[in-house]
Image 1 (cartoon, rainbow, N blue to C red):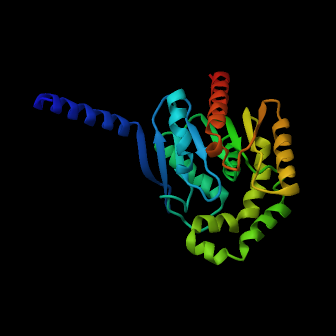
Image 2 (image 1 turned 180 degrees about the vertical axis):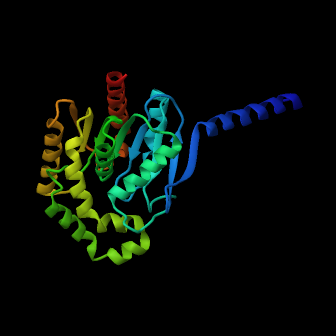
Image 3 (image 1 turned 135 degrees about the vertical axis):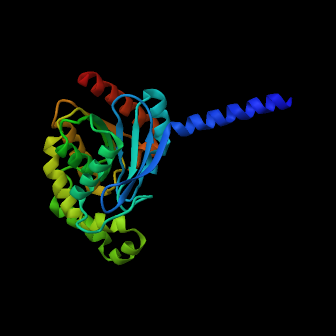
Length: 272
């Protein structure tokens, strides 16, 4: 290879790598007393927002981001909830509502002031419901994956879930402030979810794992409640993810990618 050829190859490599970098935004956004970390894949069309489950940050979606971006070419927004990943945390008056308010400030600063499509896993469904209740004209559709439902996550059940961890709460506080406050506020977060669920009138795909986060009779109740939640509105579709654990998008990424693509295309067609 000549010196000139090597020079051209080097230029092409730099150009290619810069092109990849230009497609991704990795940033911290100041929302007042703390900063939230965002990973954004650039694109066109209605952005897809990912809400992670309890204990996870935005990186949990890594396995499905590229295939979705390749298929849809739209903006993909992942973020670390307060106290997780690279995000900071403000422990004063921290709860699901104040967190969503901080998230809304970040979205506004990033320029995402219009329509959104939401993909939420587990407890992330609670956050998605609160976001929708506060911004009902913006959320055009979504995919909920193994999310708590009002039928299952009653106040009594929320107390039982919290109790499972409470003996280790001080250890958890030292290890993860984010998870500590999720547990501390669990009953309130569940109550807010039950109240906000009535505003979920947009088209949805509901995906349920067959193992669920629970066992025995509670597993059966979880599945039945998710089926009933899907039946509450005519514009909801239920998918049973066979042989999948709670993180369905890790066990069967193809199923989740296909569901998101189908629901996204359907929702965007109806809104534009």
